[in-house]
Image (cartoon, rainbow, N blue to C red; front, side, top):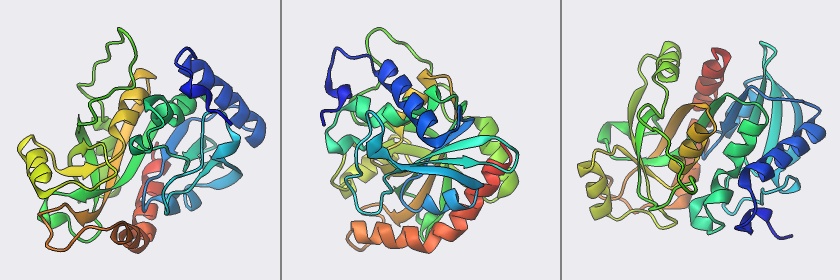
Amino acid sequence: MTNPLNDENANPFEIAKKAAQEIAQKTGVESHDIALTLGSGWAKAADLIGETVAEIPGSEITGFSKPAVVGHVGTIRSIKLPNGKHALVIGARTHYYENHGVRAVVHSVRTAAATGAKTMILTNGAGGIKPEWAGGAAVLISDHINLTANSPLEGATFIDLTDLYSKRLRDLAREVDPSLDEGVYVQFRGPHYETPAEVQMAKTMGGHIVGMSTALEAIAAREAGMEILGMSLITNLAAGIQSTPLSHAEVLEAGRNAEARIGKLLSEIVAKL
């Protein structure tokens, strides 16, 4: 099936609205309050934040596709939180390196906004530049540097990104775990890992975390008027910071080792929203 987002004449917001209507029909939940995109290592949180009302394959919803990467969940889940609110958990993430276009990358965020979500939690597995982050640290994202040379904004759409990652939500997260550190996330295009020289470039530019997602989604979330919390699981130290070669297997293993701990952390943060 051809993805309607590939039609440059189509309105991506109307497609997101249609996707949101399909989610409402399939889940029986008219609107959602919070949305979470769960990256590598973060999926366990979906089992801890509340009662699952419905879980559907993302490929059944307009504009979504099956995940291209082992370790990424391809479902969309509606969860009723203990406080009565509803959370939309997005496992069907499209990465920039899949070459489906920026519209596809941010479609999940725009769909979440169309379901009514006012808060967007974006998580990922990433490489760390700070040596003290070895061993599966969870880190708050305070800002980002977008090195994709692209944007989800189309035409003369000017959006202020000064406080893109909410200080209020970061402070709330620290109420759960005062030891949480924070840093600047640098999104590279991928899918290759960064070279040691590129990691040093990111460090010189003020970056602390390197990865292949999140920044474009955060921009789209801000455009949609959502408040954003970003968190990275440091699955490994970045190239040149650690002495061993990087591998996707290492990322998956780090995610498995940390999932119970960071899942509990995230569920406790969600409970405060």
